[in-house]
Image (cartoon, rainbow, N blue to C red; front, side, top):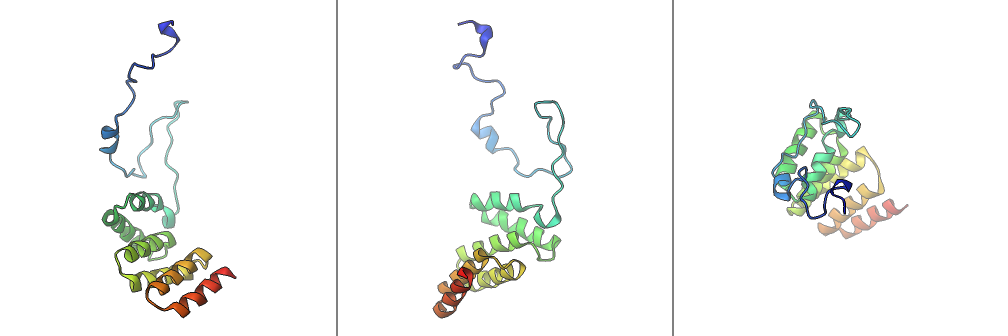
Length: 148
């Protein structure tokens, strides 16, 4: 094979980043920073998201990694900025509280989510919390409301 045709499969890519190097990089990206240029050489600015949704991606990232303490800090900041009107932050906070065994507090937050957005998903979470609290009749009523 001709060496000019392309890099060998056995040769390490000098631009490749090892997993340990990648994991040690900070997760958060400042909104004011400009991202590195793309393939066309044009630098991109991160999209300006509405205040209500600005940190949802970061909350999701930490929640899925089960980094609940970090997640709670970001949620608190988000809720402070939005005066408690961020449905996603409230929803994830309620899931964390329920995971910690604080069912009554999680129920109250899921009810707040249902007030902000009366979706079937929010109602099912309210019903699940009611069920875990032993309020089965109330849970069935909410499940039926979510279905219809």
